[in-house]
Image (cartoon, rainbow, N blue to C red; front, side, top):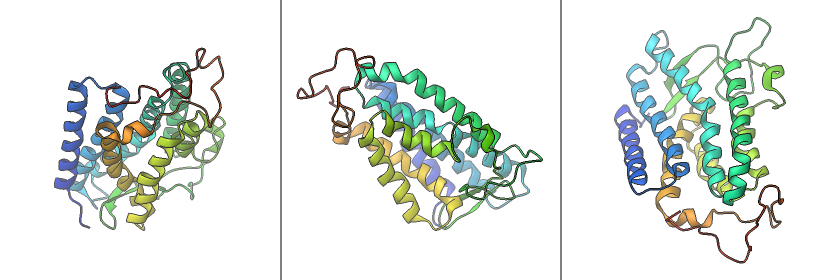
Length: 255
């Protein structure tokens, strides 16, 4: 295990510093609030190292639970930055619906950890375990959380609302560039860095600070904007005055 509390605290501090600079420079909150959320996760992981592998320790169990609850609300912030790259009118019109779905998804994920007598363990969930504990992974923290199969409570979500909200939903409203960037630098890279599925989520959160900081403070941001829905104009009820697709949007570092 090569990561440590000090490394997590240092990375969280870098994230907070980037958030502060972005806020002072007047950047839109959609850029720096997601980075703030994931920096808080890394701070949480730093404290978790103080009780790592002590599964009977109340602080270990509480911090593990807080980590899971943090994950449950991550779709809000993933969609916040995904919608940032859409035309402004489209963003404004779909945001209440998108955040509403994220709320339902968070509720479903929270329900999943309640041990109903009739619910079996969700064997397909990447964090599922018979215990609530943070343990040492290959090189970072591995979360073990008892997750139960409460499919009936998902209000139309299939087996796992998190991935539908974080990836499928942005693809549906057209933010495919950022979603592809997120998949490659988050999901794929975290899967390559650890063989432990329980550790993948923590590594993914760690990488999210870097991928979001790159988007917030480098020209990478400029290539992620979307003007059309996969080559088609957005419906007029979403974008009543569609911009000329040939005219570049104000997709500059000043936005």
